[in-house]
Length: 130
Length: 138
Image (cartoon, rainbow over all chains, first blue to last red):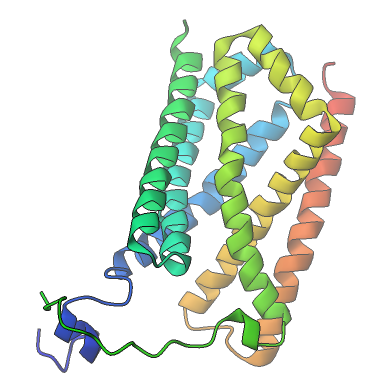
């Protein structure tokens, strides 16, 4: 790619880095997951609302039924990806000290994976039984 | 890769929030980020809900007693509004991504629509929620 056609600024070309080192990929991830979440969040809200006032047995039955479980797994998976990248964007916007930035990005990764695995495990357990 | 040991002249920084008069579009931009961060931690509640349902009736009863309390209801109400506001704010960003809605009047209209829409939809959803309780099994 010639220098004239590149979208990189002069400073980025010289240093090999942009202000945040990366970014376009994250921008696209937030948009793609955001579009998916418009639909999946609606599904989540309908599912959650339909469970209001129901006892544990009925809740387990509904959450474990194939369509609901698949929608919930999609909602959880896409949400985790979206919130991971979103929180990463917040951290790199405000935290400039390398050490604390690294620790916060690490904590962000751990939190997102832990929440994702916990939710996914719960849904699968509700679907497949004990 | 650039030589990072070379002393670099500090890059110019654009002024941040404190130098601007607060505007509606600015408040909505900040609200988008804050609701996003709130939903991030709100996912703890979703995880608790699903794990409690998977764990059994006793664990689920503990979750239900929390979410049924005043604090729980307040958190759930905040979660509902944050989710809807963040979703509508996202739609606003999609409109901008397509290169539309940048005129001053359009920006104001979109900001106002996000705010009124999120509050309105939250209230509608909670009314529906209470009607479901009233009409559903106890």
